[in-house]
Length: 387
Image (tube, rainbow, N blue to C red; front, side, top):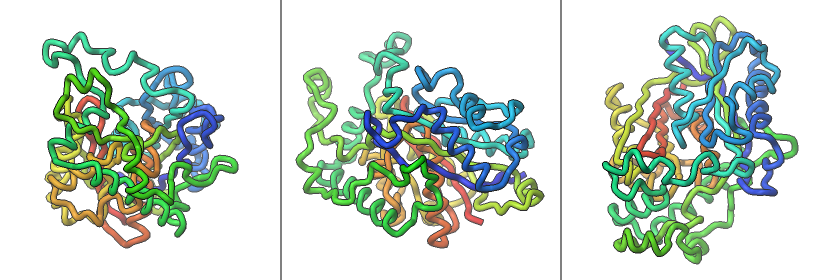
């Protein structure tokens, strides 16, 4: 049985700090809004939804106690509609998409919603732990000194792949320029659902240049890190990293047969899924084997793909991915990525899916591939086929 995407929506990206455009909204309310919009846009009875699977990374405070179920109730769905919340770090809502689509393909669901939310202004990153050393003890024997933060991992892969500061800043500036151009042309209009008067991504800076970014200081260096990694040249800054972001997103997924029975037009079909682990120290490079695995499963090559979305947690991630996959740079994050569009952790997977699908539809592309680096050396990869 095939699983299809009927629709996918997202909020605009809000700056993840006090005063940001979405910072005054409870995260469950934020997620409830996209769930309501998804149902309304498709004139669907919410009672038909078999399950809602949501991604959220920092599951504490206002995001605790199964926020997906709270959002389902806040959205006015019948009490009979269940929900669960998953955590695969930055890939949480992409994993929610996998679970929802795989449930449909297995015959366990007719209709499912995959979604995600993160309010980084209201529930700060790491507020559900004590930093990166929270679970250091059980793996100390295997990784002396413990694992490192993702910013340090980005520095390490920059050095290993010989990416200098200018290259990273140029890529970051490209992200803003592409996103600004797409926004000005109305390219995001079909995926963004307004939140009150907040209607556009707050994180895009149209005037960004590589020269301007060059003046920013490295974000992750300190005396301890200098001592542990004396070889690093320290080139990761707030400008070539994704910003703290608030946002929510959701995808309506069902069997092709159910969509046809309801008179709904499928927009894309799921073609391949992969999830893999990699080096937990480098952490950000598992996107490479995850992509290779997803392609191999369906007999495609990278040249068969019309658009690649590689999450821009840090500029070196898509750059090393493109290098090792020998990917066409023109197809890489063609509407900008998380450096410009933001990275609301738990919501990013379905946000990227929305952007990728709309790009395929507006350009006539057939296949799209998205992949996401995740803490602990994990990555998801998904291939869809536009219908």
